[in-house]
Length: 510
Image 1: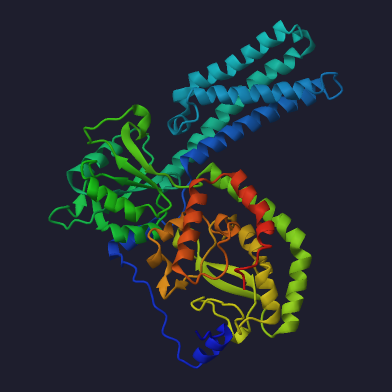
Image 2: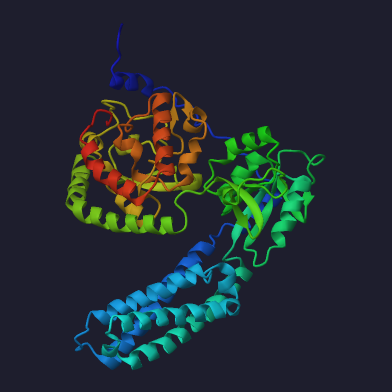
């Protein structure tokens, strides 16, 4: 059998006119659906984040108040120099925990602080009573300043009341302008959808904003308007709608008995980075209460949860910033030397920018060190780089094999378009055997439910380099989905630490 060298194959095909790039046929949203989607492009503030921030703010305010009175009245010269701060932190933490168990941080309580005023008073007073009893039985109460204790109690109570009133004013303003809400779309129309919508709207302190209805059935079987909300399109158009609008939740209003329709919809919808709930409001089948989540008193079955959400996303972003800065500092000499080598080796810019798929299938621009001759660079990545590819420069071969060409992506992670760890972003026109990746792998876009990463679980398990077979993209997607479903900060740290070790294997990198 005759074998053809990859470089020779490339040269033989170089004179042939390149076929025009294929384009995916995305469903076209109707004018009304597109207008509605544009209204919801701005991000919202999650109620979970607001209540969490309130806990931190109140804890910090109580600690600062206690320390100020301690420093101003008692002074730092006391022999109890570490006992005072310890008690202050402990009392503030206990008060926040007691208020948490008293439901004082729920959205209704924050919007209407007077409704929980009694519980707040009992929580703060009870915490001080517990402290007083503890100091008495430890026979050390006489060593602590009564003025400090009384003044901190009064000032702490005034601070809590002030913060609650300020938070209520801010939350009401955010609620009016749509800054704090959970945006939902209803999947399925007819009587079931109408009953569900009416039930949600009747809930007190409702933070759900229904953006519209999507249903595959035509207007004869599914009315174009249900409970005052328009039907914006079918399920395929819903996926495009959710790419534009910042949707938080999708509620399927079909009955559980319509198993085939529910499963068919979920197969299409699970790729979106949103919470998917199945309404149990009209179902006669009942499960244990713990099986449900609730919107007010409306029961929902949890089908899919948005991965790495709320405070998890804050923790991951902090992780990215800290370790990106560390990476930039550590590798700055290598990056500087690489930039000089590229400039001396061939003409053209040092940095190569490429469009790739990011979070929620949005296009992002990823930075790399240029490894090809500038006139032969391929921003679309339609023609994969092969072994001994003549388009790659001498310096390019080395930096691609050692993955040094990826180092500028620390800046992507620092600025927020990438995460340090996540599914590797693929070029928007990348193909395997002349088929787009999403045509090869069912549910491929589910890997875009989280922000893509500089390194990932698939890469450290050997699935890096050229994607020249359909099996390779299937395995990459399989490992990416495993990462998404099992994410923790420790998992990220493990991948980050293993990456330099696994990069020593350069078998598939060229």
